Length: 455
Image (cartoon, rainbow, N blue to C red; front, top):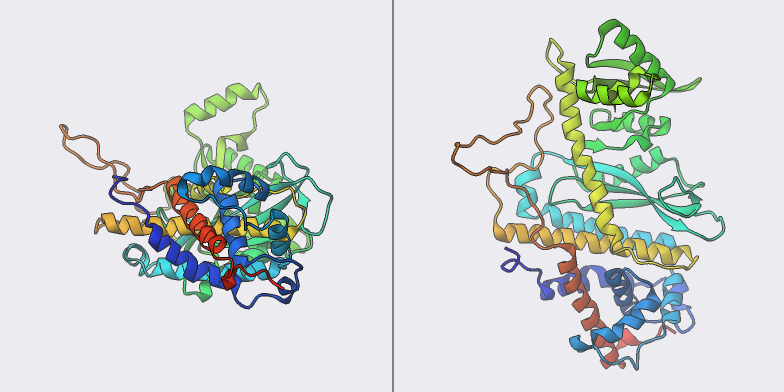
């Protein structure tokens, strides 16, 4: 299967030269033009790619280049010193770096929307989005861009990033990234701003998934304005939730239900809908054994937070409502998979310069999206079943069919899904050749204007 459908070196090189390079080689900021002994941005970008491909630092890339001799890359005489490459990249302001990378993200989303895969699955309906926050450990002193880590890294402080990603299988494009730090806007404002950007590009939103870390007053308030019907997240077991569940259990026993709740106190109160369902008897028994006599009723329930009550026909079967929400929420785990893949190409550095760290983050995002888009094209080459639907409807009155009917003598059948035809490491091999060929061209022709040091 993998031998017939492969990533194209020529096409990837063309995409790189037409959509990525022009953003950083034209209309350079004055701070970059004034950089003493600055290096061509063409060389800087190719070196950035190599750091992501090897998941290492700039210095380690130089040490590894010798191992690429079998690819024909043997001449290092004209290679600028790594110090000057870092210096050139640091000359960029982080706002300018992000602004130009967002232009590339818009182009990547535009390209995805023109594919046959997208037209078949999302031409008439919206997409499922998810938000998450990732941390990058920082061992330096506190500054305006750092926040205290929440235990996701070994460092006390970190740089935190809020990302928004499509959760539809095979089309998990990262749409935007925002830095999270003390003096930045609240999380709710950042989410609203990111959603506003993609809506301006004509993207229809079907569902928004968040984890329990977004169970905050400002997030609920902002999402209620425009996305009350689309928002779904787990609820935290606050004191109010525990008391409400205890009272519900006393009146109704172990039954699923829905309650109107409030988050916050005083003037800062946000209402929401709490949908809950008890665990099955076996799991409740397991929890009861571990509690050692300290039994709390809320531990036997699972909770979801909605901003708008689900519309269901009477009589209301809340067990069916909860099962549908729970099944839909499973799609959110795709963003965890995306982060795991992204971190394999997120290069390392010990530099304290925030602009350099911004380069490394966005470079990884662009590379990841390039892989997603190329994978979509491979699926189109192989063929997509006519009846394939990416996201099933949100109707909670019709449970999903978990099993595909088959004859007794037939082997088990699974529904078609856009699983990866070529893994990320295969695509990185192609990107490696793109970066090395570009560097080889630049170093073999030092008289080329692209290689001139910036005066």
